Length: 121
View 1 (spheres, rainbow, N blue to C red):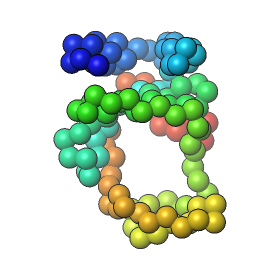
View 2 (cartoon, rainbow, N blue to C red; view 1 turned 120 degrees about the vertical axis):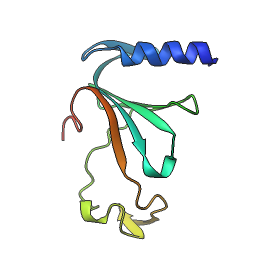
View 3 (cartoon, one colour; view 1 turned 90 degrees about the vertical axis):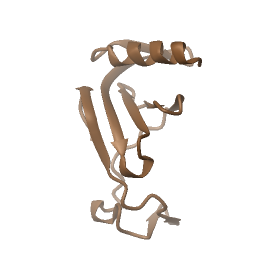
View 4 (cartoon, rainbow, N blue to C red; view 1 turned 60 degrees about the vertical axis):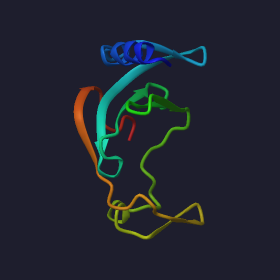
């Protein structure tokens, strides 16, 4: 997207309200949560996260002008204890070991527009 179109898209998204519809890949989705984040490891790269009623979500990487969407519902993963996040060198999930490469990264909410942090959890 060109900068003007990108700014228009971000402005439209950040002015949405709970339950407003948005079409992604031709499928209407109701937005139920929207927040603006920053993480330690990304420096000045900030992002928006929009969560939809069906559990899908959209990440909007503001500096990179990139959209990342997933329909996969991601909730709390019982196999990974909260105490392991940001501390463990390796995590085991579904019998597979994963090396944690984003250790000590913390998310900060810069602006909460509306919704819940973890709907359906």
